Length: 194
Image 1 (cartoon, helix red, strand yellow):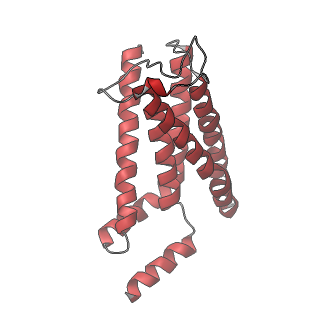
Image 2: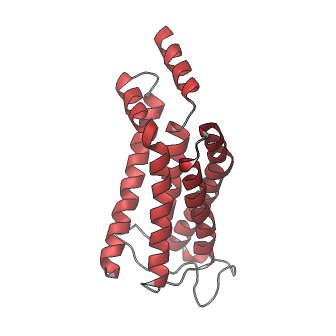
Image 3: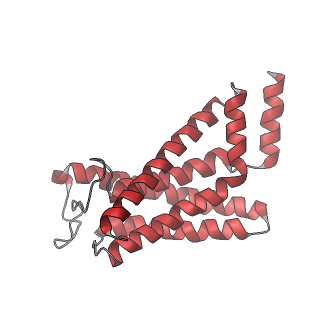
């Protein structure tokens, strides 16, 4: 696979993740009023954790491919994003294979969501830094500055943008659908009373 194909594939996956997360978030916000939105969120509930695992797993593969095969040297902010993304893949895999679902939910709540939020903040800052290179301080290395743009697909999708889409989709998947069954039935009972 050449670099252009991988760039396009990665950009499309990031946009798909962002769009799907937005739809899921809106459905979750409208679930109390609309049965269709509630049914949509409920349909995602069984696959939320597997999807949340697949996002950082693909992101980890993609970042390694870009740095090792395409020779895009990561800057310091890229390394910080990787420091958040790579453990997410491991944590979510462990949560996925655990037999004890209560413990898995605790791992996701305590470790995965905060890590994804921190990664989102770093990615957003890095993405904004690409568009505003004058913001860069002397934090980044001279040989690989944080303002280096290896590619932009569709005029705006770059590596930090793809990382941001991945982190946000993990947060949305875990926070909107991966909840306790008792909470779901309690919410359904409250809706029936209204």
